[in-house]
Image (cartoon, rainbow, N blue to C red):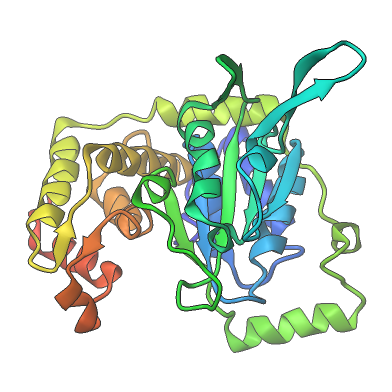
Length: 323
C-alpha cells in the first residue's frame, strides 16, 4: 500500500502527522505504517510478520508513541500463561478476599511481541479481548479501554521455536502485513541514522512525539464509519468471497466475517484518500492484506508452492468488477 495522497481535511492531516512521526524512527516501511493506521481507523487489529531485525517492534512502539495513547508490551514466550495476558484473581491476605489484578491487555495499544512463540492456549487469552473488547474472569466482565488495538508481531512459521496461530486467532486480525527487508537505499539510511547516534531503545533520540489526540482518533473512526458504499460494491465483495470458496487451490475460503473486515478496511482506505464512498479499486487494494491469513490452501497447492497472495490475485482477476 502506498500513500493515497488525495485531498485532505484537518482530521486527515492529523492522521498524516502520525505517519510522519513514525517515519522518524522507521525507514522504508511506509506501507506497513499505513496498514497500522487503517487498523486503528477501522477499530481492528494487525499482525506483522517478518524475519527478526526488520523493525517490527520498533514500528509498533513508534506508532504507539505518535498517537499518544497508553501502550503495554507482552513478550510472548513458551512459558507464558493466559493469566499473564488477561489478568488473574489474587488473594489479599489483609482483606481475606480475592481481587482481580488487571493484565497488560488493559491498555489502548497492546504490543504482542512474537505472538507465535507461545502455545495456542496462551494465544487464546486474546480472543475475547480482540473480538468483544472485554475480559471475563470469575463471572465478571470487565470492559477494555477505547480505542483498543492489538499489534502482534510474529516470525515466519519456518523459524525454529514457533507455533502456528489457530484459525480462530488469525481471524481476529483485520490485517496481516508482511514486513520486508528494506530496499538498499532505505537500508543505507538506517545505518546513516545509527551512525548519527540513533538507538532503537530510545525513541526520544529520533524525536518521535504524540501528534494526535484521543478525540481526533475517535472522530476519524466515526468519519470512516460514515464512508458510503453502494450495493454494487457490496455485491462485488461477496462475489470475491464466494470465489475464494470455489478456488481449486483453497480448502477453506473466507467467511462472512472476512467480508465485513474487507469492507471496513476499504472504508478506511477510501477515507484516507478523501473519497466519500468506496470503489472497487479500494476493495482490490485491501483484499490481499485482509484475506491472506484467512484462507486455507489445499495440501497439494502448498506442495506446489502456491501462495495465498497468488490465489487472491487470481480470484480478483477472475471476478467481474462492477462498472
